[in-house]
Length: 152
Image (tube, rainbow, N blue to C red; front, side, top):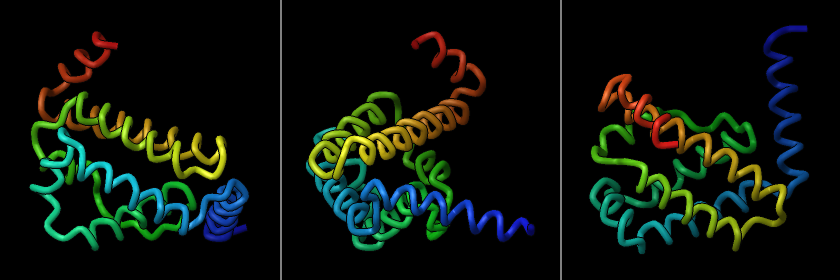
C-alpha cells in the first residue's frame, strides 16, 4: 500500500463521514455567508474586518475552501491563517471569544443536526485556541503562554 493511496482513502473516509452528518459544500457556503454577515454587523469585529477585507467575494470563497478543507478534507485551501491573523494586530481573547459566539450562533441556526454542529464547533475551538496562542507567543514570547495558562 502506497502512502498516496492511504492518504486518499483516509481523505475519502473523512469526507464520507462528514457527508453522512449533512456536511457538504452547500452547508459550508450557508454557514460562511451567515457567519460573515453577522461578523460584518458586529460592533467589535465588524470594523476590524472592514479595515482588512477589501473585496468580500474572494474572502468568502477562501473561507469556504478553508472550512471545506477542515471538515470535508477537500484540500482546496492553501494559505497561512496564522500570518494573516498576526498581521491584523491587536487581536486578543475578547476578539476570539466574540468570533466563537457568532460562529456558534450561526451554527445554531444552520447546522442540520447536533453532530454536524459539534464537528464545526470543535474545529472552531481548536482553530481559535491555536491562532490566539500563536499571536500571544509572537507578541509576548513564551510569557504569552504562561499568561494564558494563569488565566485559565
